[in-house]
Image 1: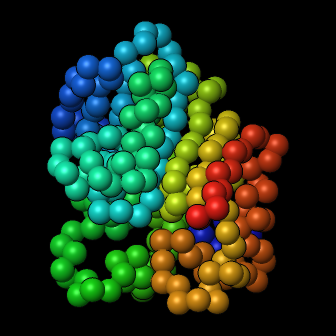
Image 2: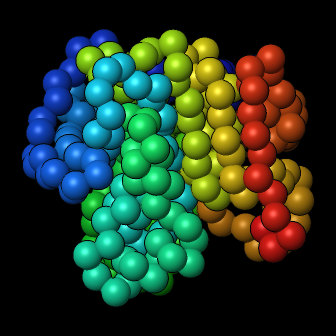
Length: 246
């Protein structure tokens, strides 16, 4: 039923990788990639490679809300604003994982970072809500589109020569935690998941003024809620981080 509600989300069968840049950062390397396929928008991905040799476990690292998209997860701290964002949210978990020996792939979701476009064009409205409404006109679900890009990045990670495809994890914060839940629930490639700050229910959220179209699955509450999706990860292990201030 979840698959029916989401609609199409499987990654393309034929695609190519465009390498925009490769940087040696001392304790790890960062490759800035675009995943490209006919009929799809390019997906920017940061691929972080550890200094340790041999095949390593891989982690799909998913970002949440924020002005810098997947840049924060990769630890790109080239301005005071970026440094503050990372420090406040402990947002560079992709970089931290790479420093600890994991191969990390971090995609940029819509509508965040470089995929947002001109923020002024939204005229103060929530980009997630506006993008959700626009996609509905085409019969698409924003959360499913981002799931598509997460799964596409996961396939990239699993096929990488430095990665042990039997040891793949998925981690994320906030919206990234929500997407970690959904990605792990629907892809058996994910062997372990860590979802931070996302264990709340839609029944609770819609009682307030709620507009995050990036987390809406139309029709979900007719069949279940976040706990039912989360349960689909079982029997694989999943760690949920939920603090007093979440």
